[in-house]
Length: 294
Image (cartoon, rainbow, N blue to C red; front, side, top):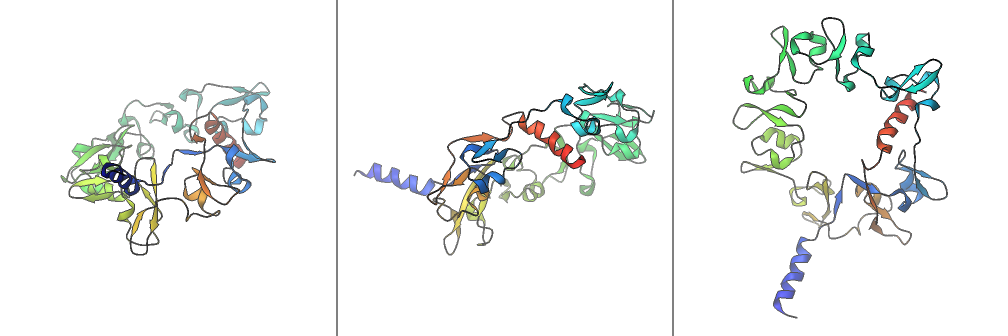
């Protein structure tokens, strides 16, 4: 065997790691009964594990469950039946009913309406409105760069950004979806998010960064990527395989990417399903809401 091939095999051995995708899960049809019951709402057990198919329609709901709030503002009770409805802010006449989920806010004029100006809201509503902050007795537009004190640097200044204190001792606007690698100038935020900050750089942690045996389980190695760790007696390292996982923790510790097989092994599912791959996720939230009301 030539030296190049040996080197290649060596590199494979040292770089291989068991990773999971936190945004995916095993298809229901591959799960055993115990695993199936852990996916309640997505899967159901009959004689095998099956995907739950929701057939939601407003017309199937009784009056007690047909309010806008309980159906995610999809339905309304009209003329003795539950029907589909497209809501607007003006449909709501009480402050408590004005839904933020539809980007409606109760203004000083006593109306439920879409956003107009921060100055139109009193103190009780101001903090609920993205981009506004109650300052010096008035609701005003939030501008991160105008804040000079670290303890006042907070809140969203837009739908997609928020105020964070930077390593430059300034309050700066930062994307709410920022990941570890976006936080080089935000040490405090980096550490609070469970990332690693060193030499003015923020990065995802590796298994080797876990110094204790108890925390040597999983490392967040990417936005959705998780790496399985293993303790070798003195330090934490990337796990070479899933052989140390058991029937009790295989499914949960693998972020529902692996399953326990009939021959006693923790193996990756052949079909991984995205958490947001179907309308079931949206419909499920409606059914959960109805379950709490019923």
